[in-house]
Amino acid sequence: YTALVPLVIYALLGTSRVLSVSTTSTISILVGTQFLHLGGVGDAHLSGVLSMLTLMVGAILVAASLLRVGFVANFISHPVLTGFKAGVGLVIVFDQIPKVLGLHLPRGSFLHTLTELVENFPHTSVPTLTVGLVTIGLIVGIERIKPRGPAPLVAVAAGIAAMAWLGLQSHGVATVGHIPEGLPVIALPDLSMFPHLWAGALGIALMSFTESTAAGRAFANKEEPVPAANRELLATGFANVGAAFCGGMPAGGGTSQTAVNRLAGARTQVASLVTAGITVITMFALAPLLELMPAATLAALVLVYAAGLLRPAEFRAILKVRRTEFVWALIAFAGVDRKSTRLN
Image 1 (tube, rainbow, N blue to C red):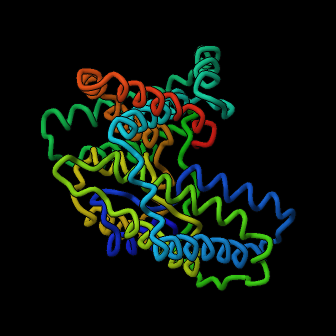
Image 2: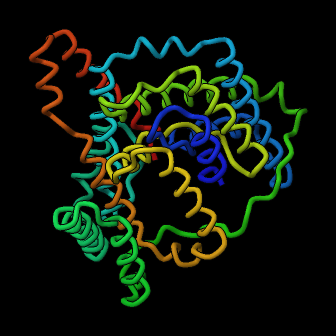
């Protein structure tokens, strides 16, 4: 549901041409932490509390836009964005590799994940790995033969067909799991929760703005205008307000989905509108079919496009211009590792 309303609202109000505004792993974990702090929340009460939290996040972002707080985004330099983008790419790649191998590793830092990956590699699921490698081969092959071809769509369709016809689940290949069907039920915020949620909402709003700004600027091409920070605050704010009443959770611009969006060929926010449209179709017709998609297929798709973010040539170009900026790029690159424990 968060992949529906926020995408549409941001597409109409935002200034980034490719930013994908939905839930992100970081925001998801912050929301989960907030609910843990609240203690036991019954299912009947859950929708009202989540609606209130999402509404407060949206209101904070809108208020920040009106107060012109977006100027802080001007302190983010191009080398920092280059390092940030490469760091995100590396973290995403190593986050998806265990899923392609069929391994279930505990969350941890980048080095911890790497260590766990090496130690558990002998337990790789061969059928799952085969699915992942075939998916990667399909995407890379199609894009080389026909660059404008729908490589991801073909790969996903092939994965679903293989799961349905070859009975891969009996060989230990996991699927993405249950996908809810139907439109969301209108949710009304529980206003009584304001005293308990304001601190968490403030932190989530700050993370939403930070992620959205970094992703929007990192994935903007040179010929595209730099996203206007105050307008971005307004757009993501209203995106959250809309999500609050439609069964959604706090949203922001995500790096992984924006990376896939850009590298798949998106040039305008029409891509987000198409995604939202497909989401609606999924809710009514495709959910049972997509539930058959192998998790390794999804992981391989994300892995291929995340790998495209690793561009050593950009670091070499920065080094040729100014060594200090190169150092800042490396610091930003290394700094992403500290966020890796919050990526799903």
